Length: 262
Image 1 (tube, helix red, strand yellow):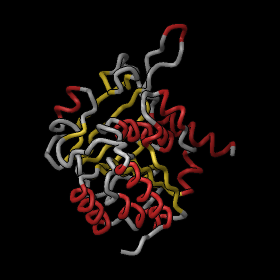
Image 2 (cartoon, one colour):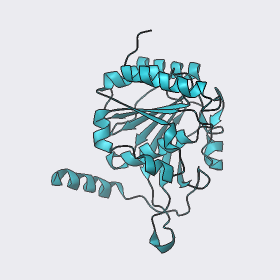
Image 3 (cartoon, one colour):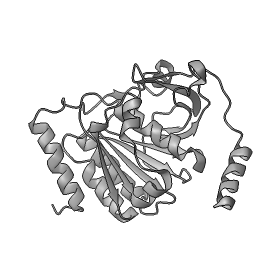
Image 4 (cartoon, rainbow, N blue to C red):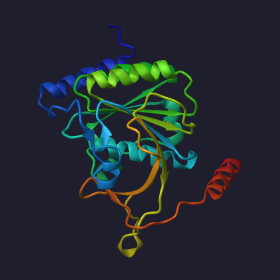
């Protein structure tokens, strides 16, 4: 089959080398990717289903970084050392910032597992996503897009979902500055930043997230959680502080002020 991108051809070779060198354990093709938060995982049948497609939407544009952080932390919880592929357009990289490897390490993740591919446009992003989910040896694929993604219609989404299921690859669709729409995703989430609990000497606390389950094909009703990331255990836990989110009108005012200043 013709390669859709020279980058993916090189990526396949790199993953194949890792496999030949015994660089990672065999991945599971079924089961659940647990967050570590007992009630959260129990509510969705044990965690995010492996080999399925899951969508993450930022509650608003100000939450793009939080949504990306949550998706990456979930991906880093995949067992073993299998590579994690992160696909994004160059435009998304400019808008949300570059991925910082020391920051991933500080959160307890292994940045060496992360293979980043930037594409020129959404058309190439979709083509690369279809290739990436079929790369033998990858544990999860994150596909990051910004704004509307007309090419990702129900037909294209079904193709991605079937590819993820057949390969046993967990597909995390990171939809930033976009509104939720009908899709074939197993779960759909809205992610926002939540107040974290300050450490000693008023040092910044662990990342905290406000999550809303918008849809689950298993049938659970919409629900919300507040989760903290535990660096030492590399898992999520109940938020140590109830903490309120910044009210939506204030968040929009901040965004409008930033746009005016630019």
